[in-house]
Length: 135
Image (cartoon, rainbow, N blue to C red):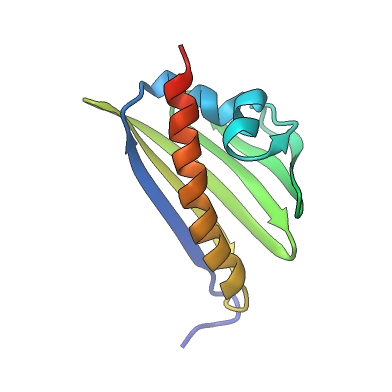
C-alpha cells in the first residue's frame, strides 16, 4: 500500500556518441540549454535560482549540485510539482552515458509523470543533437 509520502521517480538513460565535455556544455551553458530544453537564466553555480520558460509557463529551479563533467542537480517546481532533476555523466568507450533522474512525483501527479516521461524523451533527442553540433 502506498503512503501519502511515497513518490515516483522517472529515470531516462541514453548512450550518446559524444565526448563528456560536449554533453556537459549542452547541460550547463544557457544558450545551449535553450536549444534543447527551454529559455532560461541558468548558471552552473550551487544555490543559483533560475527559471525555465516555455509557452505553457515557468519552471522555478535552484541549482543543488555542480560537479563538472560528472553530476548536475537542480530543483524543478511547476504547476504543483516539486521535484529534483539529477544528471549523471559517465564516460564510455564510444562517448558518454547520460542518466537523468526526476524524483518527487506524488501519487496524485500521474498526469505530470506521464507528461515528463514523454517530454524527457524529446529533450534527450534534442540534447544529443545540440551536443553533436558542438565543435
